[in-house]
Image 1: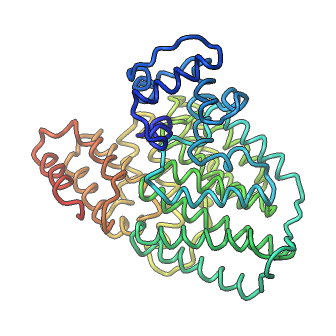
Image 2 (image 1 turned 30 degrees about the vertical axis):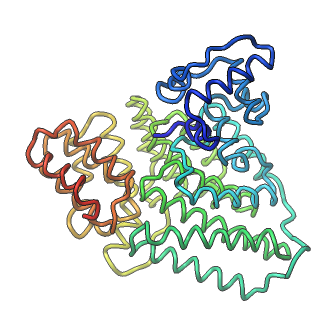
Image 3 (image 1 turned 60 degrees about the vertical axis):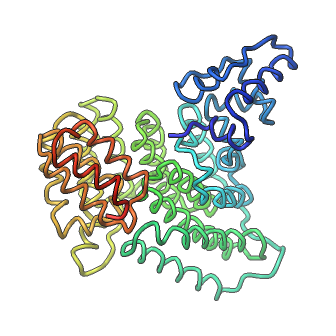
Length: 445
């Protein structure tokens, strides 16, 4: 997991030693006195989680062109995202232009070479995000633009059809195959918003299309194991839906942000998002179910058994998201039951009740059902492996991991790493040793 500082340093072309010397010089120039310039200092900041002291952070911020106010407000290491491409997502106003600027950052997101696995918002910045979102939802924005060639209704109809096709292909094809097309189309929609003229109605439709497109890119990123990239797409989707004045859509994408924080192990950041989602979606049973399952999983991660159980009781039988009206078992299971069943199972797993979790997981990972869960629930399938290992069924765990990876044309590196981390402790078991060798020797399973 690359630390944001490592990405910043790499973008400057510095080694740890040369970077330390740069910071030490700026530290002295600012009147903070002498600072050791050994590479071990930078290594500690990047690798051990040790933050620089306040004056060193100020020297670094001055070197990188970031205001001291931002370093204080965002905290370490989150202010570094202002340098590596996240400024528009967390600092721009919640306006039409702010939404467009956030969408423009998708160009950087599509380049995984620049990508950090650290969330954009965490700790105090989550509370700030919630406050900004709630305030923005009370505003009625002007969404018309007089500049450029006017957007015709036919263009919007065409764009809507394209998005429907992308979403359909996502359920059928490898996520890695559809991502370049989906992310490229988001760039097209962003150009429509930034370079063309449109009235209030067309502006609203374009923003909603952009939010759906960004949300789709977020879902694809999740299925590829790129959780922090998904969080950024969900943030821009929420911004666009908020600017369009559609709270239910914005809440759905904020749910995606919360889900990403569960995956990276930051459950404390989930709870303020969940509370805001509830406030924004009064009367929407699907959203309240989504919030309840997210809350249950967060409390389970925090080892709060009572709170997790109460959250599960709040979850309604209504599915978290509308069902896709298809006749096949694949779409019915994948759309209606999978996310809720997995969430309840994962909640019990994190509470140490692996057997109870397996009772919920078992029908969802049968041969036919598993295909129906992919790629929608791909990010959660590794938790089933955790439960299988916890109950001692190593053979079933290897079998499931092999089947999941085989559903990808080329298993993504982030997903492969997840499974390697889970099985490495069992590498002395022959079936596990063979599985790990296959991962090393045959990237395409």
